[in-house]
Length: 341
Image (cartoon, rainbow, N blue to C red; front, top):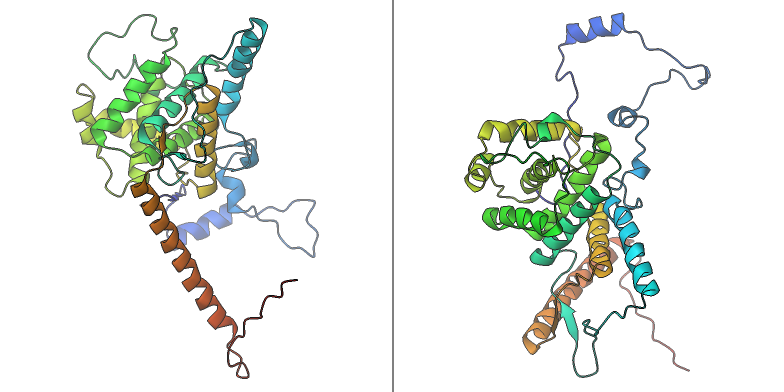
């Protein structure tokens, strides 16, 4: 368990030897016309069979670090409209609320890519889901995520549950309740968003008013098991959501994994991209991360961390240097003196 886990399952696990021979005899290997006699028989690589042909990895932001995230693209329309409206109406942005560092005071936020701020990250993830729902292309969904067919509470689902878009505050409260009750980390929220967009891409579906709660719940459930060493069990979520059963949680988790094609790997580059795109989304929507003045205690802590990292890199460089001077005729290394002119 950790920040990067991969899982891959093939359809026919551990076939017997005689069964494999029969299958090979019944299904001979075919060759393509493009392959010459010199190159031999054409065999499809396993990586070409894991993903559909029409699903290019470069176009999937949850797999490729260079592809732009879906939520940031969907939010740009509203951001441009807000800027255009403010320009046409000559609206002033008001008092400047952003803090800037000066010679006497340095402002820093406590959010980094390795330790994001929990509250701000959950707000940004909820805002990303809000833009997904608001600017969706259609209402493609699956029955396993339909809230009316699989309700989370015993309360009657409203008749307009599939029409009315949820507000950002409602999405935030739902995610915050799960994270605070299960004591999940901010990194888990970012991985949740990665799985959510991967589901929408792989399954070719949309997150809409009728399915957003169960999709978010499934993504949080999977992200907590992949990221946290001490994961929350499905039965624990039944204590948070009183009216949901363990069987329903297990079925939803199984469908979620199948739709992801059991691809739960989150590279560090993809994680970093989602983190910085969430910060960009926060800046575009005036949801800045909290800034605090740099105190003496925190300055000493940062200095200690930097000194520790510096000593670590020095030890690594010395180890690499010792390996590189293993020739018999080399006694040591003489550092050349710098010439200043």
